[in-house]
Structures are given as C-alpha cells and as structure tokens.
Length: 112
Length: 112
Image (cartoon, rainbow over all chains, first blue to last red; front, top):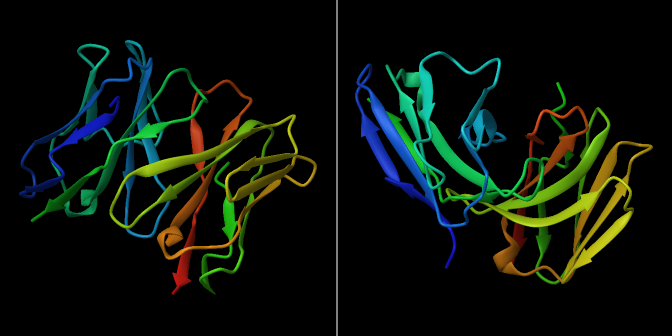
C-alpha cells in the first residue's frame, strides 16, 4: 500500500546531541511537510518542500534543518536538541500544495 | 495568526449519539479540511470542503462551511467507541503560501 513511513517511531536523545528523523513516501507526492506537535496542541508546521524548493516557517528555530535528497525521502535534523524540543514530529505529504495531506505515524522524541 | 479555534475543546457523549464540533478561522480560504488523530498517532484525513461548497457528506460525517461567518462544523452521526479521538480542522488560505493551518482541536470521547 502507498504510504508515509517514519523512522524511528520513538527516539531518545541527550541534551545537545544531534538527532535525525526520517520520512519516506511511496505516494510520489510533490510536497513533503514536517510538523512539530506537543501534547494536547495542534500540529505546528516547521517547513515544507515543494519538489526541491525549501520553505521555512518564519518562527522555526535555526536548530531545525531539513534535507530532501530525492522525491521519496525527507529528513529532519535537530542540531542541538533542548528539553523543549521533546515532542511528536509528524511528516506529511500532498500531491500539490493545499490538497489533502497524508500523515505518517510520527516519531516521538524524548530529550534527556 | 490564522490558527483556527475549535469548540468545544473536549466533548464526551454516549455511544449512538451524534457529535458536533465547530471550527472558526480568521482569513479567506481556498478550502477547509478535517482530520482525526488517535492518541499518539498521525493524523488521518476525513474530508475536504472547498470555499464554494456549503455542505459535504462522507459516510457518517457531515461537514458544513459558512464562509461569511468563517466557520465550519463537523457532525458525526451514530457515534461509535472507535470514533474516540482528537479532531482538527485545517485551512488553506488563499494567499498562496502553500500550507495548512491547523486549529486547536476537539478531544472527543465516546462512552460505550
């Protein structure tokens, strides 16, 4: 089945230790998104790619970076995780901007 | 902020009853979408309604959109225990910024 896959599902890292979260899709969608969701809050968009074009949200901290080496894969790099970065990180895709988004199961990040 | 607000924040009903959730937003939109999120999981798309539509149905779901009031409602009829989840509305504005903005969510609990 076509889907959005996120690995790992749970990630534990230490304060200040770089961590990379990965997302892959078999939908061949043009757009890939990364959201941060904290407990009982709405998903907050960090950035998105339309093909190779990177779009960063104005309030996304510099600590967060992203890479999209090809259509299928997108990575979220957190260069120096702080305690406040502990959250669920959701990857989503859509065929075109503004259309239905298909979400992966998320990666829950714990920072010790 | 374009972020929508959902009302109520939490709703508990008996199985078999109907559940209604409301969403308000602030700016002109191209479309409004509803998503469901089970605890600790990714979001699942439920329905998309475009700005020129007033009502849409999908199975036990009924969505209305009133662009003059900048509001939408999601009705789930004949609720089931499996409907227990958080429900988010998300809007695509017509400013061309290629993203969805999520509301604050309604936590729905169906009591068996």
